[in-house]
Image 1 (cartoon, helix red, strand yellow):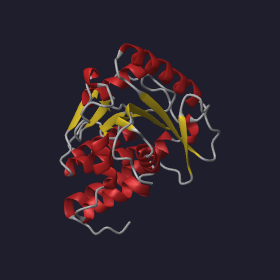
Image 2 (tube, rainbow, N blue to C red):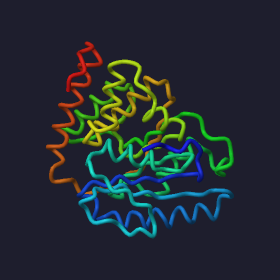
Image 3 (cartoon, rainbow, N blue to C red):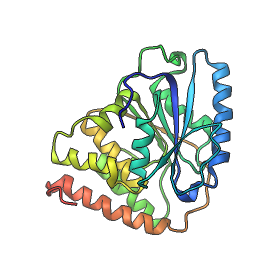
Image 4 (tube, rainbow, N blue to C red):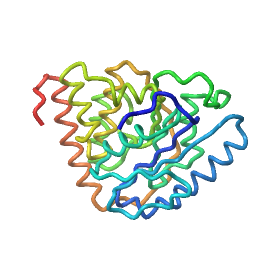
Length: 258
């Protein structure tokens, strides 16, 4: 899928929903749609779209509030890529599909890249930049280990956050620019199909941004406490192993073989 060069709206809000998040998605989309309509009534020239990226096997959310993209190949990396390539916004805002962050908080990330007074799509497009929504320190042992290892890899706090924004120019560089080295090729691979888990896909995205010298800014967000996933420990363990392998490759330059 090709990505349109020019934006046709101010903001694309993209929800990448895992199967366990699918049941919450209609309420999350409604909340986001109502808030963005309010923002559009207050900001001259502000236009938006909402995209829901779901597994083709899951029930589709209502299509009146969002454009739905169905994935044939599951995984966080594939969902991020599909949402970005299918977007039309000058800024792409990736939002937790479980409702873990309120829309008003999420919009703070977009405003870091394109201030409210520059909301019109006709304004100069934002330069390549990425904004991360920080969650604070994880308390459970395995998730905390994943967070520390991801931070060590990227030199950025909380790079595996699932609330982040990027300008359209940054998205094109991150997803479409030809890899310059074997490590960049590995990161590009993780951003195409290898990053099944959000922790791995998010860390690969931030690490690639740093290697491309795309500025990264952060903001501490207020997160809603959501019920934990039944397989969260297993996911954290798998993510820890994948990130450890990536960490070794960045330090000692092991060959690409997966």
